Structure formats: structure tokens, C-alpha cells
Length: 102
Image (cartoon, rainbow, N blue to C red; front, side, top):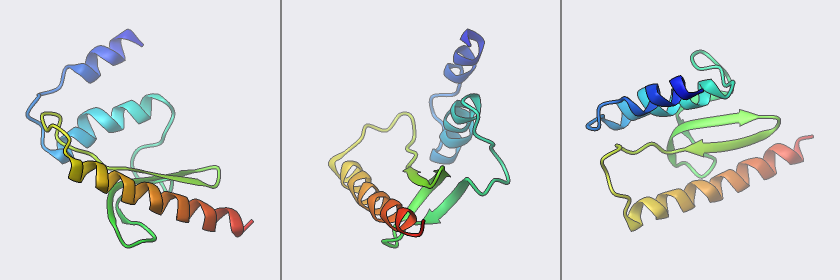
């Protein structure tokens, strides 16, 4: 595990948002067993049920969660937190719909 952590931390600090997803975020999820690539459980650039664009949508065991990537060097702003709140509300709606289909 120490090797994987060192590899995750050895990335260029000026990565773009997409670079951050593929060099930092996706290896992290892959380490914990998520299949990266052509998987129906991970969808890139998806639209939420409230028509918001999200970088990555994860689904497993009837639950959905969203991940919005940012450049590593960017300090988060109030706008970013508002964006996160809108995704969390979408997540609640999506999971409620998902659970009602059972």
C-alpha cells in the first residue's frame, strides 16, 4: 500500500482537471476495487437527474454518487461548494428513484 500511496502523490502539481481525474482520482478508486474503463458502474461526463453535468457518476448496490474533479492547485470557492450541494441534491433524488424501483 505504501508504494501505491507514493505513486499517487508523485504526480505533477499543475495537472488539468482531466489530468487530476486520470492521474490521481481514478488510481485511488482502482486501488479499492473499482473497475476503471468500460464499466457501467462508472460514467464520465454524465448528466444528473436535475440536468447538471458531473465529471464522474459512480453506481453500486443500487446507490449512486457523483464526483466533481478540480485541478489540484485550485482553492475551492463558495461556487464550488454550491456546485457540490446541487450534486448532493441530485444524488438524493437519484437514489430515491433507484430505491423506489425495487
